[in-house]
Amino acid sequence: MQLLQQKIINEGTVLSDHVLKVDAFLNHQIDPQLMVEVGKEFARRFQNDRITKVLTIESSGIAPGLMAALELGVPVIFARKRKSLTLVNDLLTASVHSFTKNETSDISVSQKFLEPTDNVLIIDDFLANGQAALGLANIVELAGAKTAGIGIVIEKSFQDGGLLLRDKGFKVESLARIQSLQGGKVTFVEDLEVVR
Ligand code: 5GP
Image (tube, rainbow, N blue to C red):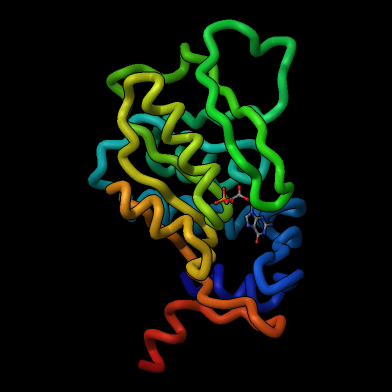
């Protein structure tokens, strides 16, 4: 996705060889027009997968998840990271190790929003080691539903998540794939494919 790559180049900040900051358009301030395009692209890539629900995780997955759901014409559910007074009964819960925070915590979804007949599209902002997506897939499995695919806005291909999820047989679609952040420079997988 050319527009997304441009945004990453122009407005992203490489924090280290492993972490990209995109709080100017995705993780804090959000670019609505970019999110419209992100939603359209996810919908195009999963249009034949009979998606009935989008599942994402708070907070940075909500914007792309919502726009994908809007384009696909289905509801969006976001898994909660924090305990909530109103989220108490019949929870589906998975344990997730956070790459950015380096801590393990539970994520939860109310059972009533996922049916065994659901064909779920999982959406997240970043793919690093795949733990967030795997936790969401576990929740789908606990509901007896099916994960039809995983849509990622920015995949860091130099980390293990993409391989892990694809090895498990998931259809993973990433709108930008980063090969390297070394030396403060963003290199996309697609750039290297062009050079080869
Ligand atoms: P994973 O579970 O795949 O290891 O990591 C994915 C989660 O960690 C995403 O939900 C995202 O919030 C966060 N994350 C991973 N890598 C980055 C990164 O380079 N930048 C930002 N902003 N978040 C990241």
